[in-house]
Length: 196
Image 1 (cartoon, rainbow, N blue to C red):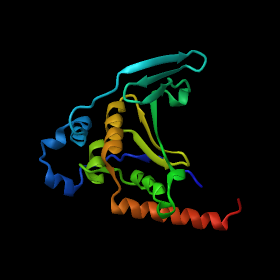
Image 2: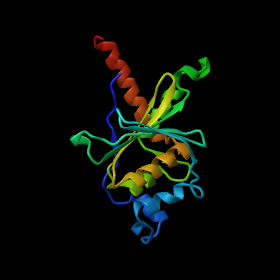
Image 3: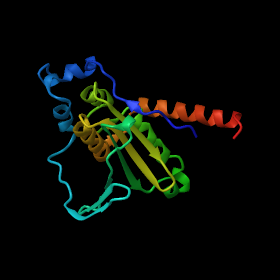
């Protein structure tokens, strides 16, 4: 299976349909302020209950009271300096599908074609993060589903709000599903005609 490229936010003006629903003053808000309505209430993080650091790899690991396990390592590659890459793995994946739901887990990958939530359309989210260097990818694996974000240190806060909004209330819009389905059909046809 070929790896899909990162989906990058585009630099563009707010879509006409979205501008009808918002006043011009609302479009002057920062992207973080515009993303804030995607999140119901204040964010409640977990308390750090365990913290370890491995000096040989430079990885700091933490366990939070809410069950989240995280790992942090500063990028040392000069080509990736100033980059932040976030990967969230959710247990359960392709192996958790029942006979009547085969393929359903794969469809989560359609979310990357046009990220949307219950609170904002894909166009509204695109407008909110437009101009920011935020790449996004979703992949279904046998034992997990991963949400990956690649961004810069400057756009980290916006990227984290974006990721939280998708994990909390992400939805797949019909147009995004159609684009994902076409990609998958083309990929399957290619796999049948190309030698392994």
